Length: 507
Ligand code: BES
Ligand code: MN
Ligand code: ZN
Image 1 (cartoon, helix red, strand yellow):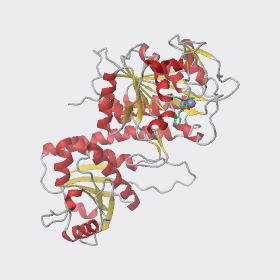
Image 2: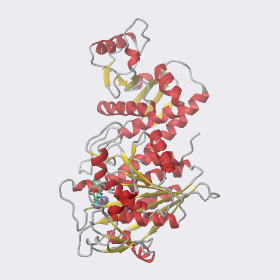
Image 3: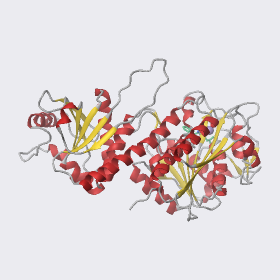
Image 4: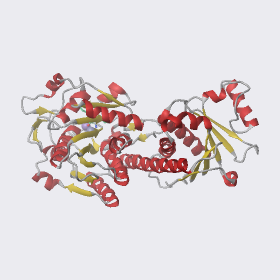
C-alpha cells in the first residue's frame, strides 16, 4: 500500500476528490450567532441540526458522512469528532476514525482540511511536524488490516491520495516544510508498525524460525545493516541451552538473530532490544488447550516489534547504537521435546529446572539477553508475549512492565507516551523471586499462577547481569479480538513506535 501525501493550499483540483475530511471539536458546535463557518453555510446548518438533536456531538472518533449535493466541490464531507485537548493521540484517533469511513466509502482521493481550530488547538502545542505525523500515522495504521490468503483475491479498496489543506490562512514555506517532514515520519513509522503486523499475522506454517531469519536478513540487506543468524549448530557451540531446549521438540530448528545498528561508533552505550520470537507456541509437553490456540501464531509479536522498529531506525539513522536480538523457536511436543523435570544449562551458565514447558518464552529470552550482552549491549529492553497473566491484570489496555532500573523505565514510559502506547509498571519486590527458586537448579521456569507476569519478568531479569533492564509483556496488547482506534483486529504491532521513540532523538 502506498498512499501519496501532500501538503498545500487548495486548488481547482479539489472538485476531483472523493471526500473532504473535516475534524470538528465540540466547541465549534456550541450554539450561538457568533459561530464561525465550519465548511459551507447550508452544510453547517445541517450539521448543527444534527448536533441540536444530539445525533452528532463531535465525540472523539464520531463520524458523520454528508453528501454535499452540489453545495461543495466534493461529493462527500466526512465530519470527524476531535477531542479538543487530545494531543497527538487525539489526532491519531480522529484520523483513524476518518480512515475507516473512507474505507467504507471506497474513497481514493481525499482532502484533509486543517481548520483554524485544529491548528490553534492541537498543533499549537504539538507543533506542525508532530501534528502531521500523528494524522498520517492514524490514517495509515487504521487502513492496514490482515490480508486473508484466499483463492479469490477480492478487489481491494485503496486510498491513493491524501492532501492536507490549511482551511484559511496562507501557509509559510517553513510551515510547509515541517508538515512534509511530519508526513514523511508518519509514513515511515506506520511502515514499521505494518511490517510488524504482517509478520505477526503470518500463519505458523509460513513463518518458521528459519523463515523469520530470512525476513530479518532481507530487512538487514535493504537497510545495509550487519546481521548474524546463528543456526542450531553454532547455538550449540555457544551453549545456548535455553534456545536449543525450547527448539528441540520441533522439526523446524531454532535460530538466534542479531542485527547491529551503529549510529554512534565512538560511544560505548548500546541499546539491546530483545524480542521473543516463538513462531508457534503449542505449550510443548505441557500442551495448551485447543480453544484459541491458533492465536499463538502471534507469539513472535515481540520479535516483530523489534524488527519493525529496526526498519525505521535503519532509515532515520539516529546517532545511537542498537543491537537487536531475536531468539526464535517453535515450541512443540514430541519425543524429542523438553519435559517437566528436565534441567537446562543456559548460555550464561545458570541452570534452570523446567516445571512447565509452556513457560518457554523466558528460556529463549534468557539466552537472548546473554547474547545481547556478549555483543556489547549496555541497557536492555525485552519485548515479549510472555504471560496470559498480564491480560488478567491489565486486559488489552496496557502493556505490562517489570524493571530493575527505574530511570530506564522512565525513559521507556515517556517514549510510550509520545507514541500513544500505554505501559503500566508492575512491582518487582525481591520476595517475588522466591517463587522461581528451585531445589534442582539455579532457577525454575515457572513461579505458578500468583504474580505470573512479575515472576516471568524477574526470571528474564536474572540474566541481565545487573545492567539496566526493562521487560515489556505484550501478551495482552499484541493481538486483538476486534479492532479499536488505529489498531486492527489481529496483530497490532504494539511497541514498534515506543522502541523508535526511545532511541530517536528528541529536542
Ligand atoms: N505465549 C504464552 C503467553 C500468552 C498467552 C501470549 C496468551 C498471548 C496470549 C506463554 O508462552 C505462556 O504460555 N505462558 C504461560 C506461563 C505459565 C506456564 C507460567 C501462561 O501464561 O500460562
Ligand atoms: Mn508458552
Ligand atoms: Zn509463548
